[in-house]
Length: 181
Image (cartoon, rainbow, N blue to C red; front, side):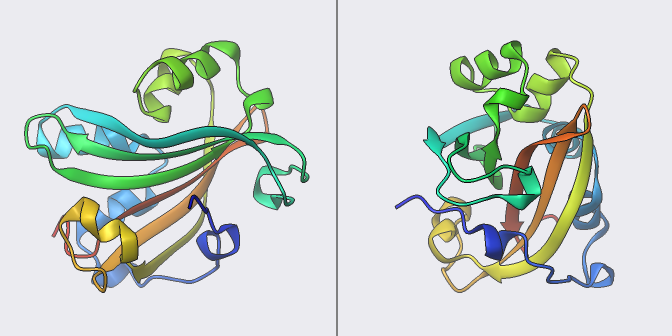
């Protein structure tokens, strides 16, 4: 069953950044596109693998997107995977507000397998990223994507992307605690 737990994913848990590797800190604090950062670090093309994408009507208010229940959203779950290594680097869940996105970005989300950041660059969408939380959590059902046990730990960050001063996307990205050391 698909479930993005908003209260859990935007909790105000804090992660001690001092215990992380420099690259892990970069991934958690960047306001750039993670796809390009991964490509630069690992010198390989990063592909997007869509695990799930569906338009829904929200059953609850989503304050971080400034929308009320009954609003149409696009829910998306993806992996960022190395083209040559076939390694899953990042798992991400996104909630997008289509009515706040330009038409070329909406088309790209539905008709391509390009990451959101790349689509925003291509459409020249001006954005601001606001990091809401960073935390550790159990891998649970996501463990299989990273070849980990369900009790292994993932590091995650939740942030929102604003365009034209409106929140348009809420994203949670996750990767194994043991990755990127």
